[in-house]
Image (cartoon, rainbow over all chains, first blue to last red; front, top):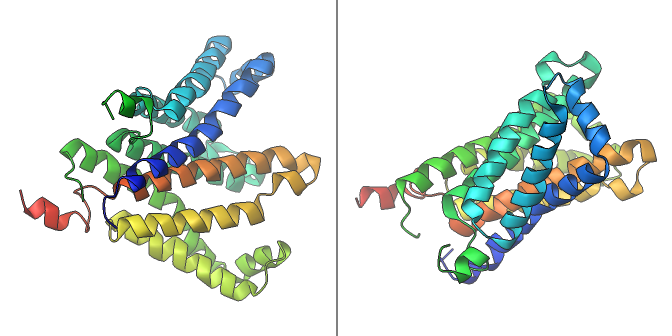
Length: 139
Length: 141
């Protein structure tokens, strides 16, 4: 495959959109269900659950939108990677889960790890030409 | 291939490794639990379940290892992306399952799509220098 321009403009945009589709609606739903989210966080023994819920919303919605539009996209991808890296061992700790949940939690854990991997690749190479960074000559 | 910086080489290798970590062990498990895998595929109404199980093992183990090694990386990433997309629509149809399952299936559906997004990102840029594809380029330094 040659490094044709279309491969590095449209494909990265589709990639960013699919990643953003995971985070933006999840962040949005956390606003509507804020108290439920804080309760879920508290149930995992995390301190300051309301603050953590607010941070999660900022990460998923804020960084998700930056990723989608490709604005400071490399840093948005890194931020989301850190976010996923922190929450995954807390919420999908399959090694400590009851046997009935273990397999499901393990799958969720490794799926998250794979999403994190994709975010790291995005951090490495940036958002491509079809992005606000690209329009500003910073992609 | 576009010349890559060492920072890009490092992070993209790490990214490929983390993605391979979901596919390769999953594929190995499908080999050891072949009968169970076939049953699961039958339950989803897929024809030729043994063939489908074998194909998914080839993709998960074979293409997964190639992705890790960074050999023909762009085509491999595209192959795994297409596979994931097809599997996701068949096995996580959150719009067609009982309400009790819908949320779980929806989460898995969108996680898989996010994973496809990561694979397309690899398809766009290739593997970087720390890969079989990048070997020749690395030797040029």
